[in-house]
Length: 215
Ligand code: B12
Image (cartoon, rainbow, N blue to C red):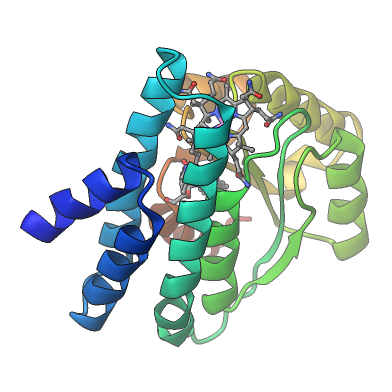
């Protein structure tokens, strides 16, 4: 328990070396990577709160992002060593939607999908709806995944789904959305089929879809 709180505090204090040391220790002790990510998220959430209260500024947000990214790198070997799903038949097109450049969570989700045996096309950040459409068509994808952390991301998600609809592709794909603010309301507004703020949960949802013949 103590080490978890130490890690939250080290992230909030933006103490990079301490954060990496604690993540390494938890990895060596065999901690569940999902749990480590949730602890790191607690830390950066507090940084976000302080940013909202104007106690922290953009520099601190940048540093928080850096600490998370480097920590996620430390987790990559365990994520990658996790057992590959026997035969996934999913082709996923994913991106952080237009207007939003947050990608740390998306990248974790992409790694997990790749580990799960999925064919993944990661478009990157700030992605216009047309780019999603083109890639879905080109790759004949059956899953579309939007990531977004800003409130404005909702409009972009909506727009993207609308474009898929008007091009006759909406019914050919399943759409999952993820990121800090997503909830059931977002899912409905964005015209999606599922939502989650946990990358591991996201992979489970997609696995279930494909098992039951969806997607
Ligand atoms: C780091 C950070 C940044 C970094 C991002 C670096 C990067 N490469 O991503 C930088 C400094 C660039 C940044 C910029 C900005 N940021 Co910022 N940022 C954050 C911060 C502190 C952490 C975000 C993060 O990485 N979390 C950790 C990851 C792992 O969590 P996650 O994204 O939720 O991902 C998990 C799940 O959601 C899931 N997941 C993610 N995507 C997907 C997708 C799918 C399909 C699935 C299934 C799952 C999934 O998987 C992950 C693991 O489980 C948050 C605070 C917070 N509370 O999160 C603010 C925050 C998101 N930022 C905020 C703001 C305001 C900004 C700026 C506008 C600041 C400014 N004035 O310029 C800019 C916007 C730039 C833009 N156009 O996008 C606000 C958003 C407020 C709002 N309601 O819109 C927040 C909430 C801070 C706050 N409280 O004010 N930011």
